[in-house]
Amino acid sequence: MPKLAAFPKAFMTALCKDGSMKLSEWIDLACALQIDGLEWYAGFLEMQDRSNWASFRKQVEDNGKTIPMMCCSPDFTHPDAAFRAREIEKQKFWIDMTHALGGSYCRVLSGQRRPELSIDEGVLLAAECIKTCIPYAKARNITLILENHYKDDFWEYPEFAQKQDVFCKLVDSVVDSNFGVNYDPSNAFLAGEDPLELLYKISSRVVTMHASDRFLIEGTIEDLRREELGALGYAKRLRHGEIGKGLNDYDKIFAELKRVGFNSWISIEDGVDGMDQLERSVSFLRKKIAQYW
Image (cartoon, rainbow, N blue to C red):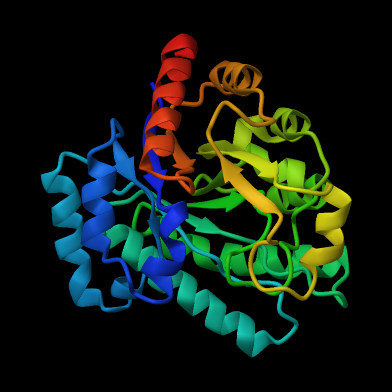
């Protein structure tokens, strides 16, 4: 049966930018939920010091949870080779972090969709960088997971492989037992596409999942398109919401994942409106998992 983890979507600025929240506080909040683990983020301020890693792992495990997944955002589509080499070194650092925390899955991304980049060139650059990182991950029993992403919180341009045809092309370019997909259904909506159509194409490669539901506070997807280029992070009109109350059809999603034998981690991206909301999302997903597995 799949296991549930949670990600601190509501506290990213506090944990990664201004330090107004400590990781120990998030651990206490998350461990009070009916979940099995905590998805980590490589950009947590307190994680830049390696000497902190063991103590955070201990705090989580002392609460009966684990840290199965690492969320990080390498930028592998930069045209400069020296820049990409630095991103590969960052990815190795994050792989080390995942290993030290006892995790099994470390995210990779394609990179930013820079206007001058062709699809073929971007796929080639991203695939080469990911393949370079795989032996390092394999030596530490870590699986690299490529997410159908929208945009990192701190990026200027959207994800290069945001559209499913580009994403599938990149996935098909990397075939290895230590590489798979982290499926996020909400991000397909932001690409103007059907998340189920994407899932049916890549379900056999899915090894982890982000559970989310996404809403536009105002306007349309087309309005979002006009705003997303050249702005840092997420557009203001974009909002995460309570799982099960948005646009995603979790019955069809879970039916397909069950069909292909998925039995791994589902991490919840929710709670932007408070921990009560996150608790309701946990309850919804637990019921759905019990229904399908």
